[in-house]
Image 1 (cartoon, rainbow, N blue to C red):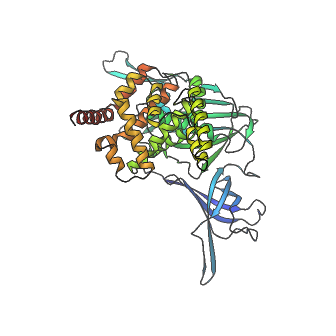
Image 2: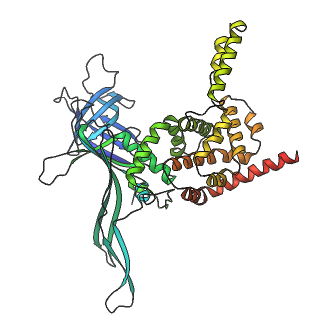
Image 3: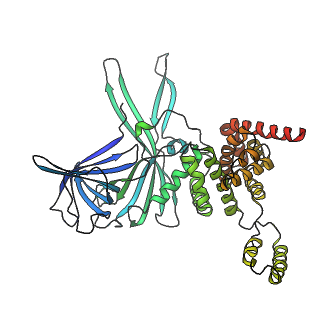
Length: 483
């Protein structure tokens, strides 16, 4: 089956205030580049003085559906050609496309729910409504397989703020029978879908933060970037059999993945829904996500985007580790608070008589009572299981020293300092990987994943890189002892 990398909506397009001045055109949703492109066969009649500003809303009717485009910026590609006749084309880059509805304002709160399919979500859920059993038919000797469908109940939890509900439900669809000259084929597909619900209607983007939180969790759990396959906004209806009206949502940068992009690799999640209670996990994950904040986003940036210069990745991993410590050990001190206060008083008194011009510079530094970066890294690993950490890092002190030196050398742009402080190439190459794995291990521990499971994760997922890093650690220790 050929891969479809784009979807096209052909129809007419106009500004909400001038519906009679519609022009023909095509909206293209590019799955590969995650970009939206609207090409028109004529100019939109924009008010004078606003031609260079983004257009808040463009309405359309395409492929039999209403379309709303939000924040449309004029792009290169349009042209005016004068020959036998004058023809005009115009190109816009919408940021958001809603297929199935016309909004009066970009922030109209009319959506009651949201659902999305994410790559990795079905594997992470690790449950099925399909049962397969081996059986022998009446009087037959050959073994056969029988499939039965047992509808799996959705797992659901309540949230503290809008949207108020989150659930995973199992969608099972079948195609067939399709009879060829030699056989009859049946195809059954099962997918786990995330659905969010709101007690009061929300705008189109009111569900995205919670959806992205689940996408990030699946990325961490599966060790593979989770991609969005589809997004639908839901509007409740008054039908006798309740079924929400669905509005397709596309937005620039969503990272859409086509079904055909999903390869045949078997995912081996670090943990699944069989290891944790869904409601407890989501509550703890949302709380942890808010607590760590930007450092978690930096770590996820390394998870979602592979490749790039190892120096950049190493610096980001070190910065994320420092941020994790700040968030998880907010009361960590280099000196006991009373002792630190005494030092500050003594130094302040001395500065009053002597370094008056440099007093502020000195006071800023002595008032910082955080431990040194190496000590903070050593403290951070105590969040995870000790045996799992040792299997991953071999020697915590060496890892912390190397990461501190690497982060400072790269951050201060000291040419040659990284190679001097971390002289083994294997260590520099593996340092980012084991640091990222360590931060994932800390996340698992914070989410209540057992020590036994943490050790299993290191053994089954990171053992090769852990061993290679361990060889570098031991080689460095051997060279130091013989020096």
